[in-house]
Structure formats: structure tokens, C-alpha cells
Image (cartoon, rainbow, N blue to C red; front, side):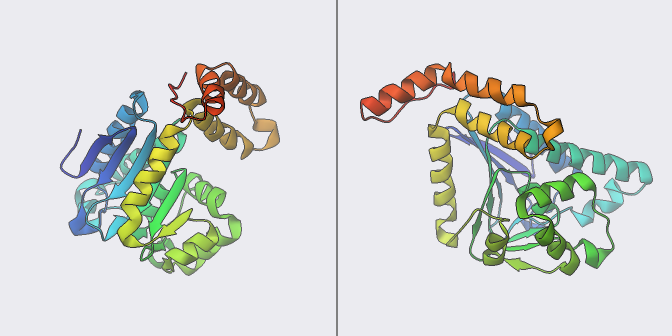
Amino acid sequence: MSTDKMIARKEGNAGWMVFNNPERHNAVSLEMWQAARRILDDFERDPAVRVIVLAGAGGKAFVSGADISKFESERASEQAVKEYNATTDRLYARLHALSKPTIAMIRGYCVGGGVALAVCCDLRVAAEGSRFAIPAAKLGLGYRLPGLQRLIEVVGPSFAKEIFFTARQFTAAEAAGMGLVNRVVPEAELEGYVKGYADTIAGNAPLTVTSIKRIVGEALKEPAQRDVALCDRLVADCFASQDYIEGRRAFMEKRKPVFAGR
């Protein structure tokens, strides 16, 4: 599945979604956001896809935010602005809520909407030369609560404030120090590293992986809002699964388990 500016491919048990607008540092248009939603929906439905990777084409950027060249056609009126914002909000929320683990593979610039997209993923792996920024304060832009909340969940309130207050570019090492990225690797090794990580995750028991993703989400809520019964049910489903039997047998037989996700 692909569009002019979005590429989707499936490699083994990994689904790859690539933002393909390198001449504009992978700035994202309304059409690209809409295509991204369709791609993610397809990956979510496909049982063969156990992990999802997001990347940017061209080697110079992950995603650099909105495509300003499209503003006149996509944000020319108040209604158009509302439609654009609603579309991006739905995509961020959809990505954040996926049941399957997600990895942002970051090379080059990760700016504005790129950071917003990356923090919707479960893991972020960056090349050493990557640069991160949210320049809202240099543009006089407001930033809505859901996106800010997701950033705070990743880096905490103090670093979130620093990112916004300074509006400066941070190095990959600084991003790692804030917890904004999980791993920093040499640029030449980035894709191989991410493919290996995706294979590792895809080879583990899907019910365990998805249950942890969901339970961590519940743990981040206020205690009164947590669905404890759901968490207990997810744990019980793991212990009642064929994969749990397979995992025990594989351990006893000293072989690699083959999990079926049930």
C-alpha cells in the first residue's frame, strides 16, 4: 500500500510506514495524514504484523512538522484549520492507542509535529546526528493539551518545559538524557538496529507485549481512573494462552519459542 507521499511495506512481522516528502524534510500535508491513518488501520488489522515502525525518507529528516507550502490550500479558512487540526489529532490519537508496539526510527531533523508523532510511539531510536526541537515559542503557536500530555509522559514536566521555553534544537545525546529517545546509534547502523529490535519484539509473545502496553497506559492514569479489572483480565489471558504453554515447553526443551498470539 502506498501513496505519492506515503509508503507502506511489510517485512516479516514488521509493518513500515515511511513519510516520503524528502524535498521538504518530510513535512506532512493533510493528504499524508489521511493516508497515514489508512496505513495504520491496515497494520492494526493484519495479524501477521506484530510491530510497526515509522520512518522518514531521504536521510535528512524523520518528520519536520506541517507542510507550510500547503497552508494556503489546506488552512485558508477557519473551517479548514479546524479540519486539518482534527485530522492530525485523530492520527496522533490513533497511533498512540494502537494495540501493537510502535517504534520511531529517527534520522536527521525531528521537529514540531515530528516530535509529536515520535512521542506517540512506544519506542524511539535515533541516529547520532539527529536533532530535535519544538519551535512553537519562536512562532507564537499554542500547543494543545493532548500532545503536551504525551510529551510529559515521555520526558516529564521539567524537560517538557525546557523544550518549549527554549524552542532550541537538542542533540540526540541530549534527547537521550531527557528520555525523549530510548537508544542512540551510529547513523550507518540505524536501520539494521531498528530491524533487529523489531524482530526481537515480534518474536516475543504478542499477548504479553500488548498487555504490557495496555497496562502501562492504565498505570499512567490517576488511580481512580484505572481499569484494574481490565489489567487483571489481560494478565489472566496471558496465563490461559497457548503461547504460555509454548513458552514453558520451549524453555524446558532449550529452543526458541514459536508464538502464535493466542
